Length: 372
Image 1: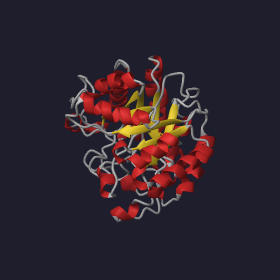
Image 2 (image 1 turned 180 degrees about the vertical axis):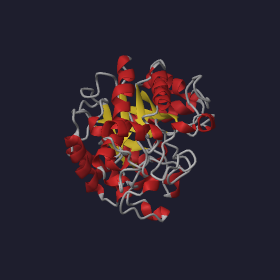
Image 3 (image 1 turned 90 degrees about the vertical axis):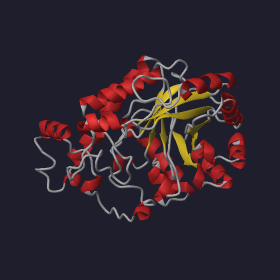
């Protein structure tokens, strides 16, 4: 589960996920010829020289990691050159060039449905998802202040998100686009995180349940004859209304975002939840090139075998077989535990692993990855 302040308060941090060379996700092989591929999520920083970045990327490459997911948009400013958003620094273009010199893939990792840009909050408040109490996320975000999710059925939102993906596919040399936060807010957060916020979520509560905006209510009423707010005593118990939210995200992915990337022969992947129902994220139906479930076992009070158990189920549930990479939360793993997690992931069917995040990997972790 990715969260900036949310995770930081839990003694954690952000998130991320990745991709590969188009037409090659299923058949691409690592340097050892085993088929196993390693990835790492990287958060950006200002004022770092090309020389220092090349040093970081070289360390990554020499450790057996095949590609990086550079966070280029985290709901406000862009880390690539664009006229669509405020630009922090055109870092993506720099790292693409540096990565090519050492044979390292560089993918653009973006926050998809969260928008904390003051311009859009002020000028497009109708873009934001609404909870079961009628509160919009821009003024009443769930859990933490940056949880300002947009509505997946709003035409303006669909255009905005699609244009973000379109812009990134046009960056020369980009290896892929990686979708993060492609979902609605957690209607139930992972059980291991609930005590940190003095929350007990034994069922779905309306203040965490989105999207009840006018567009979604009208669309659902046209399809079913039901207004979820007026006609249902307990909307959370209605399977049709629940599926409508799943399908709203799936439709955005399959009908808008995936075709954009595919039209330019750019891989498109996503960071996804193992407990997808809780975030309205039925990713087993998505037409993407690969998936990176965030198997952060400590968030779910699980042991290392929990990673393997979930991998097997998630892989089996896919409508179309695609590579699934085990997303591992490095802060929770000693080097010995990392090695065991990799073994479990491999025997459970993963195509590789992705590590969150680069700044949490020490030399002992890197040695395990290099020798696995």
